[in-house]
Every structure is written in C-alpha cells, then in structure tokens.
Image (cartoon, rainbow, N blue to C red; front, top):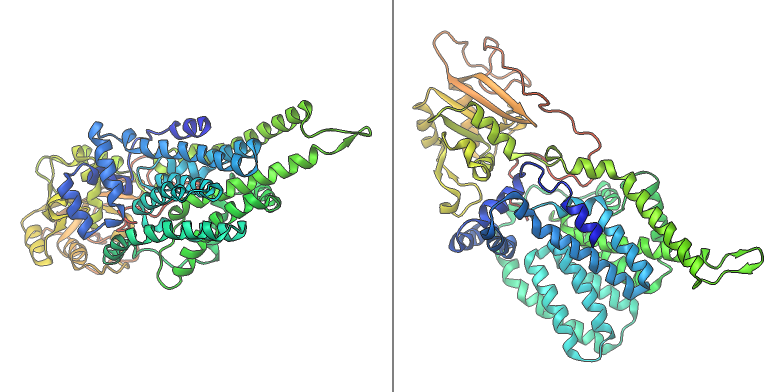
Length: 535
C-alpha cells in the first residue's frame, strides 16, 4: 500500500485536466437537483460517482482533490490484492502480488484519473476477498457483506457486473458445497435486481458509448500487455511465464484466472454484437494477473528452496533460504519497476492524456479580447470553458443557447442551424476552438449544427490567425471583404475558409503537435471527441 500510495501521488498535479476528468469536475459541482436531471437524460451510469464527488469537491474544488479518491482507492486495492494473496498462498505471495499491482503502469494511470475506474477496482477486490471469507464461513450472514460491497460496486459502474460470472466460475473450480451456492445465488440475485432500474435507464443513453467498436485480437493482445507489470520486453514475457507456472497453485488460480479472463471475455463477446468493451472498464481484472504472477514466483521460490547444495538439503523454512528468496524478490520487483520507469514518467505528463484543457484556456486568454465571439467545433470543446472558465470569461459563446447545468447536458445545448446562421451573420470576426481533425473538409458531420458551423465558416469567413497546441487549434476567422478570394471547395488538407489567396497562418506555438513516443498501450481515446462523459 505504501508503494501504491507513493506511486499514485508522484506527479499527481500534472497541470491540467483532460476531457473526461473535466466532466467529473463540472458535473460534481452542480447542485444535487441538477445532477439528478443529468442522470435522467444523459449519464445515469456514473450517477453514484458524481454524487460522491459532489461531496468530495465541496471540500475544495481542485485538480488534486479531484484525483485523490482514485489515489486512495488504488492504495486500498493494492492492500486487498495482497490480502487475497495471503489468504490463498501465504504472506510471501500476498506481498509480491500487492507490490506487482502497485507498480503496473496501468494501475498508476487510473490511480491518477478523476474517474470511477480505480474505485470500481477496489470494490471488486474487496468483494472477492469477502467471497473467500463467505466460502469458509458457516453462517448465512457472511453473504451480506459480500452482496453489499458488490452491489455498491456495480451501481458505481454497471460494467462491473461480469465479475459475477468470474465469481461463479471460482466457486465451480473450488468445488464448494450446495449451501455455498445457495448463499451466493441469493446475494447475486439481489445485486441483479438492484441493478435492473439502472440498466433500464442506461439503455436509453447508449449513445454515450456509440464511439466504441467491436474488439478484435489486437485488443486481446493490448489487454494482455496492460495487465502485465511491463507491456513489452523481458518483463512482459517473464510475467506470462510466471502466470503459467502460477496455475499450479490451484486455489490461487481458481480465484485469479476467472477474475482475469471472464469479465474481459464476456464484454468482448457481447461487443461483437453491441460494442461495450474498453480496457478501463475491466481495470479490476488486473488483480487476477498480479495474483497469478506472484503465485508463479512463489512456486519458483519453493523449488529453489529445495535445491541440494554440496549434498545437503536446504530446508524451505530456514532463515538463509528465506533471506535469499526475500532479497531476490525485492531485487526482481525493483528491476521490474525501474525497467518501466520511463513509462511511468511519461504517463505523468499532461501531454500524455488525450487532451489538456488548461492549455486550451491559456491560448484563449492570451489572444481573445473582451466581447469576442467564440465558436466551439465540435460542441464538446466547450468543456475547456467549463473546466477553466478564466480563459473564456471575456468572450461570448455565440452558439450556446442553454448552459450545461440548466439544460441537463454535459456541455450545453446549442442554437438551431437557422439561429446559428443569424448569429454568425451579425459578427465580423469569430474565434474558433477546434480539434484539427474536426476542421477536415473530408470528415462527414452527422450533426446539422456542426455542419452549419463548417459551412458558414467556409462560405463567409477566412482565417486571419492561428495558434496550435497539442492538436487543438485556436483560429481567428474574419468576414470576407470584397477584395478577398471567392470561396471554393477546400483543397486536400486545407481548412474551411482558407483559400489560395488567404494570408499565411502564423506559426504554431513551440512544441505544438509534437509526437508522443513510447505511449503506453492503455492510452485513452483521441482528443476533444464526442466520446467524453462516456461510461
């Protein structure tokens, strides 16, 4: 837990929120009635998390406080994984499993994110430990704690439900008696009944995950690398080998293997018909990988402890053997962490997240004048103004009809196409905040409002100025004058409103659009897309 806490606190203030975090930040600061309205219309699946964060951010609304619940949850999960290892295979395996969980890059990534995934992982690990205690118990009351923790975890995020399948397979592998099946069945049934209203409401909000695609074998490989302490090289292959050896520890394998394989397997299978899978939705499966690797290391340590030296048999319980095994384990864990240190460092850079809304706000405050109209393309870009309003305080959101809190949406409701045309007709200049790809003329826009934005900009305006940072553009569009070149179909790669006779754009800011090398395989989704606020 100390290792996990230290790793999670390292670089926690990375200098900016990205889109999904900003959704948590601005929704959690709304009033409870406003949050309740949002859950009815848009984002019911995160309802309990938003209400929890409403209480947390009431203490102090800041980026570090936003991420602290995930830090605490990841720390608790490391301890729970260790407790599972101790119960299943002894203190040595438990200690190794907990530390392996703490130093895995995927764990550190979500331990520093203001979303619910680390909390869900803690809930699943706690429920799994309570499951083992219930199996060994003799009273029917032992199932109440298990059912309560699992129900809260699934309400926190409904895609934790597949863990029920993992626990059912665990009971089958352990060959538990009928009374255990009866107790578990009642607890699982209560959880399912409790979730039915949430599932029913969330089905009507499935557009929140419309961006997901059916996973292929590449996603299987990506998940395998994410749950390993090292996503590549000797550490990765060594982890796979130790997992295979760990299967010999039958009781540990009966718990760890279903946890690792069943939830991702269920979601990937369902996603062939209706995409619902993403690696972060099964973050809790990582605990199974850590337990298997530690169990394999424990098996290897046991074999080494029985090796004969100079004709004399060394006892596994001897002090010298324990010392050698302990030192070897510490060295192996240290080498594993150091080999992934560049990945950990890179993950703590704001530029390594899908976007940095603080940079967008800083660009705006440096260029906009009081009263300047601003247009967000697409409308999800308004999250920058909601998360960091200082940069846009002097500007006027020309497309906005109803604010996000008042409209019960994540980033507000915009004017109709006709009203937007009338509003843009009244201005001679407008700042546009956009992702570079959103202004690509070859990209189709299903939303009529977004099509109207691009059409008006191309027909009636030309680009006078541009600033770019991390693939986010801030452009000043000015109304065409009689001497300007007539509008034409944009050439390949030419943004709307830029013609052959338009003045050259200013140079981007330093380090703009720089490539990010060495990105971990669990990197989140692209910048400023309508995928934000997703499940």
